[in-house]
Image (cartoon, rainbow over all chains, first blue to last red):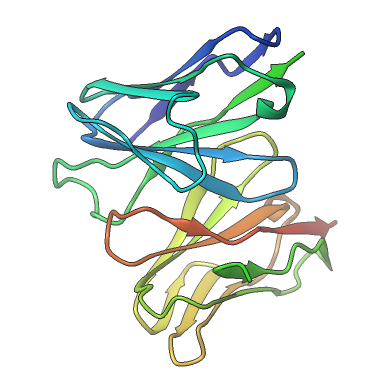
Length: 119
Length: 111
């Protein structure tokens, strides 16, 4: 089956620094990837839709200058949390769609998530 | 009011029992309905998918969608301790579009 990886799986950074999270589709090409955040015991909240070769579409209330998304290739999207603060501590999960036609169009494959802790 | 409502639980059942989960929603444009299972600190994995109203069965899992009532359900038969996880419903207006998740229900199946 389709596999999506995320790196790192866990990161601790100091307040004010920036941290980059990678999302890779390992065995398929993904023109569209999604970034979610999940607070403890809460559901996934969509942050932005990442499209290869174009600007990401951010959900209402998500600061695009704080959460920079780059989808430079068909297998890689990155999320950079700039000037991180403790309130940015969360579980960040990406998902990707296999648009080759091998998988159903509705299906999104989720990565294992990245736990960010800002101290 | 949230777009998708889901009882957070926890729902505790004995091994072998039927687990019954449900979500209600307010957006009548939703047409694609999914159930995901998420283990602690892992990404969600797709369990069931249903388009529009109707029932779908896959092994021990049965998904039901009633669009007239804006209500969806997931039933897990012969539950196992390995079914202990958080179950998330998710919906979208079109295939491949962004998903709107419910809050998740934590399920605990006791041996």
